[in-house]
Length: 293
Length: 225
Image (cartoon, rainbow over all chains, first blue to last red; front, side, top):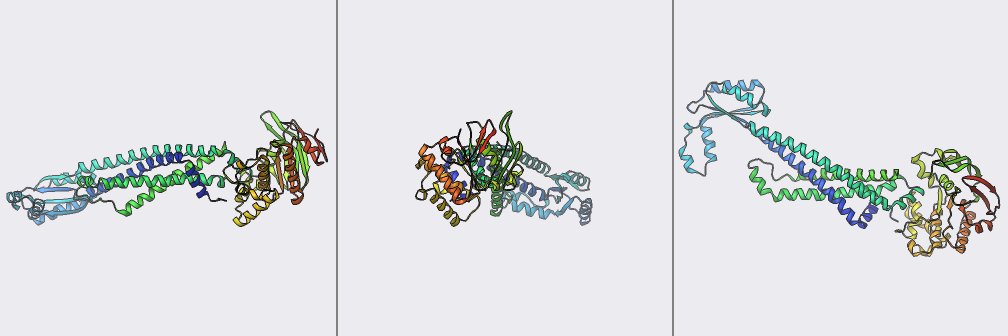
């Protein structure tokens, strides 16, 4: 006497493998999209944070000028008083040469061609908000001895735009697929309900509650969600691992790869959760719809 | 006790049950007779609250059937054993599982349920066929399984809607004998809809006659006319 809705649901799934395959496939596609968009969105956010947290602006002094400590302090305090900056760092001609030497240590020809006197001293500024970089830049340009100001405004604004676009496109695509998946789950569980019309009719007449009738169908939806989520998450993880070499080259210096295991487990939890919610609500709606007929 | 006063049910403009009033005492065996379309099945469905009552009152053991809220209907129906003309057995479950269904709904413990199923199948003479599936049984045996399912939870009321309709005369007789035996042994109220004149005439039991939804005759030891 099987009175357990979970084993009943699994037994019914075994009896209709093609319907189950269809349900799990559409669930896996939807959850793959959700999972992939989420991972890409988080990755983009991390890249954006990386660029935002870097000394985002460099103000170079004239190359023949060695700024006095007073001059440097004046600029530093002016910047601090704006409240727009996180940090300000002075890079002397010697510091600049050391950086240059580190960057080109594998090329002796380049090292020989440059001396510390040739490189300009500079000031590195990290802004609280990348949108303020332009104002800071304008302010520094007016300072005596400043020759050139460079900042990554374009990179940050492009990344911000890109991240927002990913979010929007992702949400719309996932939203549409969630609706399609709901409809497919409704249809598949609806077919199963219709094929058990007599059984359900009898159960109602002998005193079965809504919960008793609905539970195996809701569990079936939940199983579609769980299996779909595992497939989707596994596929996303495999794609990340497979393309790790390419991604490491593309994101050189940005420490977001490989994704931490804990993060990927959280993604798995979220994907399974979304699948379970879609499946359970789909199953429940199918039963409600059927019993109302 | 069952008490109906001015019971009415309409399907569109058709009066399926027209102002019917009757009383059935606890432990009574009553035949419900009439031609096809006279309202027998509708009355059975009203008693089961499978259909909503349009007007009038129907009280069963102090419960106003028309006022039972939707969420409490399962509990109400668990107090009634039902036997259908088309048996309504689950073909993918064996005899034991079919009979156990009402007990499953009540969350009865497995050992207790097993004993009750065995006792019910003993009563209908099918204890040795517990593991068979409905497709492996004869029409009479299938109806006996349906009766076992109806009595397994020991309801106070059994509604039998043409239980002999699909059976040959000899098997029909044995089914009626079985229902009468259950009625006598368990003191269960039995309402049996039928248009089998032979069964009614040989039973000398109370007969309620319906015609076009109207209750036209209610006689003790009645005959099928």
